[in-house]
Image (cartoon, rainbow, N blue to C red; front, side, top):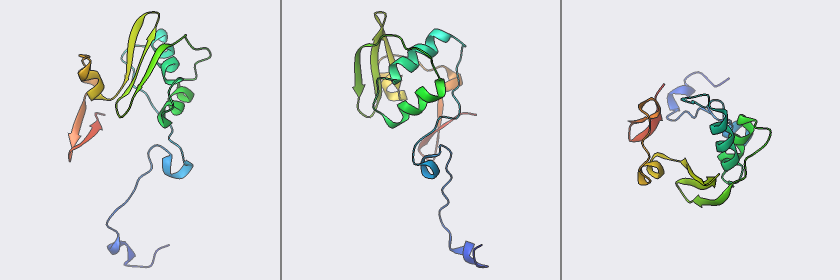
Length: 123
């Protein structure tokens, strides 16, 4: 227990939403899908399974897919996301800038708003 008055000296509080600080690795706790398409879930897990990004392992673990689709021409795009082909269809997984660059619109339900210049997901 801190000494009385010690809280007056605190100017930063860190909250650990993902488990990165407490567990030493990120953890996905929720994914918002616009449709319950099992093929989309398996495709997304299959692509993320190829990635070396620290969040990719957490995504694959959370999705708990039993078998993956074959992924072709997987490409990691540093700082943006990934691009890959499944059944001759190109898929992108990444940030909003990657989607915008590739003329992919983001549904308004998934749009990010800015708070103090930082992206925050709508609730």
